[in-house]
Length: 109
Length: 115
Image 1 (cartoon, each protein chain N blue to C red):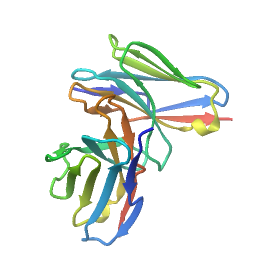
Image 2 (image 1 turned 30 degrees about the vertical axis):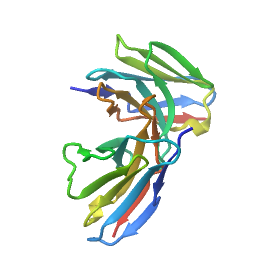
Image 3 (image 1 turned 180 degrees about the horizontal axis):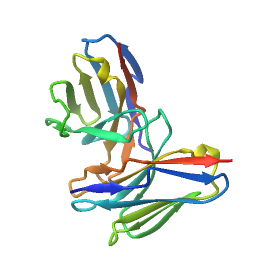
């Protein structure tokens, strides 16, 4: 079956670095997405990886290893506003998105 | 970037009535749109995939007759919650994909409250 696994909750300190991992199993693969969602709001797009390696966008970076079915989202210089849920989603061969349950990130001062 | 507009953002209705939620892609043509439901403190639950000009594909457990989805044009999909009940109260979100890149853009979401 198709499955996405990511931790339920993580806690980090303001100014620090945190890595949120995601493993996936899908029928075919057309990319891995990361979204940020604040409570009560719709998700916003963070990154898209379809090739192996690291993509950097400012304080956020996303990594993909297709052979391992593994991705991570790296957040540097954490700010209080980064407190949110981070959703990992993999796109299968039919261009359907398989969603993880989300990782709630709590930032402490 | 691409914009997806969802309307209304909030709606309150009486039990037994029907409510229509619109999802529009403002600056691109979306051959595929998705409808999700989100319960408090939960991740997105895909309800159905809507392809322009054809019937929507519903996920297991989603009542087709209750949640009517229409994708009449490349820029508009609608979700109609028929004969709404209090348990239908939820946050409904749509998204649209750009086929060339696979990137997905979300609407702002619609919070439905059924009294």
